[in-house]
Image (tube, rainbow, N blue to C red):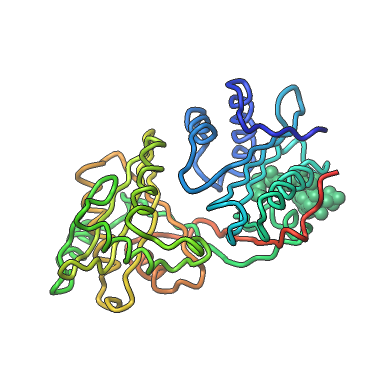
Length: 327
Ligand SMILES: CC(C)(COP(=O)(O)OP(=O)(O)OC[C@H]1O[C@@H](n2cnc3c(N)ncnc32)[C@H](O)[C@@H]1OP(=O)(O)O)[C@@H](O)C(=O)NCCC(=O)NCCS
């Protein structure tokens, strides 16, 4: 079965791509909300500032049997890992297709001067033995948590909001950060707990705006609540509501800068976010989030708000030198 590069997919190929995602989702529904055809098309066609993407597919069953996306953040040769995502239709597995797509991606990683690659997978799925058989090792465990807003006891959000620490005030914005807070917000972004995701590219006002632009181009809405001490952003939280919101929003970054920790700012900004969304986006019924398994403070904040663990996922990494070569 041939692997084809699909750097400029046609409409028919995008429809086929979507069918693969839908078939994989039907087999592993715990992973994420069901894919939506328009969203698949937008993701395949829109460029992301600061990153390039390579696409491959394997034909089979009268359409596509499998697809793969390689994300290449930063400049070619940059000392940052690529990110691979491979999906094989359940009926076409264990025939070496995943391995062949990985080999195609390995060639592109080498050509781009990358030395390592990351993959995010659900615990207990075939992806784990697949990656381990190709030289990947687990570098991070993530807990997927879900907050059902209907389960939050009445009054809890108001109580948490009223218990905000003295000397801080809340600000909030939709979309890109307002100019007056841009530099302070970028500094606070450095406090994020997940260095693997942000290494090599320091946050600055430009990058913060670019990230907001990526969300807006997908048609989604980014909401941010920040706690200020004077002009300093002491902590913040971000939630993205998809444009086709079917009830579930996604938690993005939350961080409190080190010198302001221990004052319940994290739970305060999150409570303020819930209060804001309840007023402005009543269609949001659930919020999902991923936390590093060793990030005890963030896990405690989320549990106090009512988030419950839904699934465990892992980040795997491999040196490109260990990956299979394309035949
Ligand atoms: C993970 C996935 C991509 C593997 O695709 P695949 O085409 O079945 O993989 P291959 O046939 O190339 O498998 C290569 C080797 O991986 C290992 N492997 C793959 N699936 C396995 C399973 N279910 N159990 C045990 N080992 C497995 C085996 O060593 C296999 O070699 P073998 O069949 O000779 O024993 C596929 O199961 C899938 O799409 N899963 C859902 C999406 C996902 O989680 N993607 C991972 C993100 S990178």
